[in-house]
Length: 82
Image (cartoon, rainbow, N blue to C red; front, side):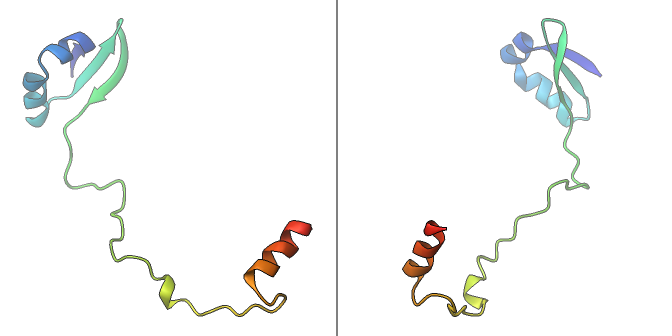
């Protein structure tokens, strides 16, 4: 693992990123304290599941009939009064 300061990273990020792409891990420091690690991306593990892009299915839900109020406005007014 190599160490690089924030200042060095600002001056020449391209060389460091090329090494990361080749598999090198970098420890980024500020005032001699580690603040980050830059590691190569692994393509085999996906930590965050992909977002469903199918869209909303709200239209498929059955319609709910009001039983205690004649309108939504009346239902909301009843809730506010409680």
